[in-house]
Length: 119
Image (cartoon, rainbow, N blue to C red; front, top):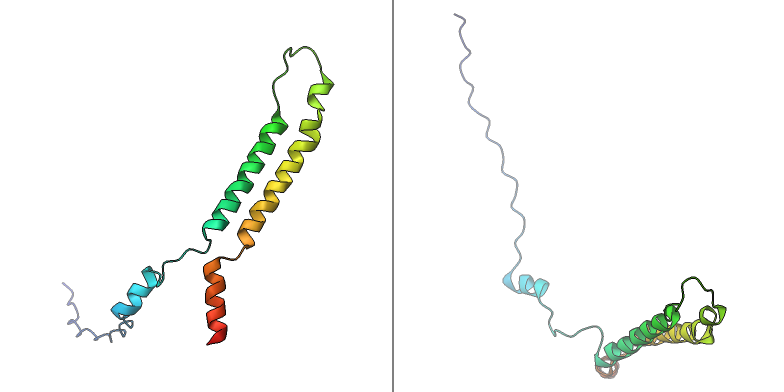
């Protein structure tokens, strides 16, 4: 039988430094907002809802109704002013109102901005 070499003492590995721990204050600030305010205010959501409603009404008007007789072609139903003119205008107006709702400043932001400039 062959002799096995004597076991060498294991080299001690240096432990990596532990990552810096955050204090409880900084941990709380990560998960919660300090003032808990939303980006958009009530008026913004109302304007965006109105815009969405206009877009949906425009889509509904664009679809129109079904043909009474599928075998008969009625161009006045397909090319009616409601489908060709009114519905697209309503949809574009809805998109404009949604964009206005997104870009409108909140009253609370305006007050905060004024107080920042005064200080």
